[in-house]
Image (cartoon, rainbow, N blue to C red; front, side):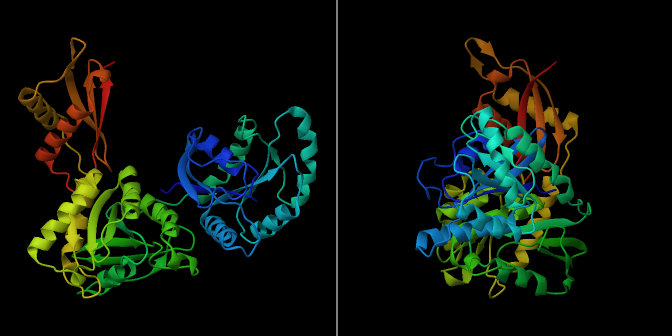
Length: 436
């Protein structure tokens, strides 16, 4: 089930980035008392009480023909289109401005739930001055102070109240859902078309469970699959075609609903920083991952070139050392037959459950081979381990003192578990806990 998406929107210099930083708990956005500082949308996970959601900080909506301001407006438009709930920020010290009214007109057209927040209300006396904001037509305005953290709880209660309407049903257990992510022009659409038209693939299209997306089911070798819509499959406006940064949010939405994520790399242009950032979202979400090197027909595609490129991938993506690498050409369909078997394998490994007695045999053999470390004269003792979750496989190792579990020894245990059970294509998680 995907997380809901909340966009913070408003004209420049009303305190959007300060509020964003306050809600995500760290100073991610640049905060400066100058209009236009936040030029790009910024994404982060946030939570309120027990509810997690994705939060977007946008550049201010400024109605101007200046190139920078036009770009900021375009990015804010994308955030509005993709968001499930919008927090509309206005400045309580300045009252309603003509720019606020113009932003309100844009938000009316979105048909999204709007929560109106009046920022910079730093003391109780100012709360009586917020009533003029009712005239914007978004119901009760919430007085807040991003700087001091006042009133954010009431605002978030309202935001979260819209989330249950947005939940989607889980998919069939036997169906493998996978998505293709990557920067624009790496060949996502071409690969989708290649997968859906090769051999005897049964294809049908049904409306997806997320807004304005089409999930495409197909069957291959008696296994049901669904390709989840990404920015590469359906573009909405030229801004999706012109720049890399617009792909991230739609990739996040696709990742949320996937069992397996295909991370595409362009063999022709090589690996860039954006590739690593996008792939990192799949890893952080705990999804099974297959790395796909597309456009392999455009380079010298012999065995040596393949090994050299694979080595580059491993250097640039050390956090995906568990992910298999598939080289193919979506355009010519060369080697595309090698992809689906890797998707199936990654999905199966993502859902593996290991018996407790077998797991503990592997752990104890590992400890016998490499004794646990000591710190300040105290040795780590591993008592037993058990698997507590799948998708991704997650293990709890009960120890005498979790502080003694050094990350290098945790990595050693992970390697031994992988050597014993495979887990190719999926991350695994290990948690050290004190036995109660």
